[in-house]
Image 1 (tube, rainbow, N blue to C red):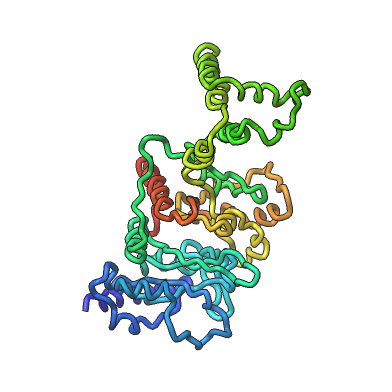
Image 2 (image 1 turned 180 degrees about the horizontal axis):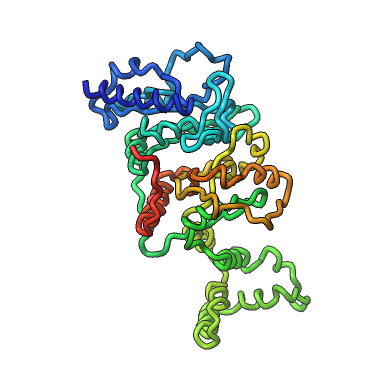
Length: 420
């Protein structure tokens, strides 16, 4: 009885959301409510989900006979998929609209899209008509293999997110802990070289990424990788008395010295000459084994990449006519199949986030994208960041998101959503 009462509450909330945003379609909940697993870890929890076929006229009134694997996994742990959320046709869009179910509104501001490709999923989460849901996204087309789709959880809070995903993938969930013996290393992608972030997205990135690594650290890693094998690739063909290039001769000479000599020289630079920058380049400058070389680009590299999910807080209806090319920040990591999570950080401010008068677009894509940016019209829209981890390492990526959330809370900058 309590399971049906809980479902009735969420359906009532769903109706309120749909009247506002046009984002939801019923998924015939009675089919799942009656035989639901009552002893599962998500027993009785209503779940909203995306359907990649939603919005295609050819699939209207033609339901498939069997549930998708992701739906069956939720059913096995007692969850009740009670509603489908709207998606853009093909999923390749930051604007959620199709001919069957129409245009989905942003829950925070009318006339703007809630995003994509899982845009409709954000609306019930925002208005508390769902605590957890399943989003859908496409990655890349492979000749002869079609389009590889991704199903990923979306939730009201990180705790809800973890509870859902632990329950669904319980057998393969990995317990991970961030290192305590060294600082967490963050790489920050400030600009993808095509479209610079809008002022408000850049502010969100600076807020979450105050302790980003310096380019100097990249120079340290690069110098070690370039000369890991004593540059034998290009130096072994030199004759003994042949003139060496002036730029590389000192480096080749240093690589022939015993390691303790370089350590002493680094100590001299650091404490006598008071030059820690040069010392940092010198102290690990030596031929390396395969294991040491892997360390330079592996565990000694960055733990996470922090960037924006899109150059704009939201796309106005019809804006994808101009903005479809500016998807590098999210598309890059989908193509690479890296783990990535998006979380809200702040809201746009109509005064402080105006586009500066001296802004000049670098190319036609950037020009058309920033043309639809309007801080006054967008005032109050949420702005988020994207935390990117390694491939098949979602659990660690979640820990990175928790870290940012905790630091924001300690600084009194916790994002506040729409209250219940």
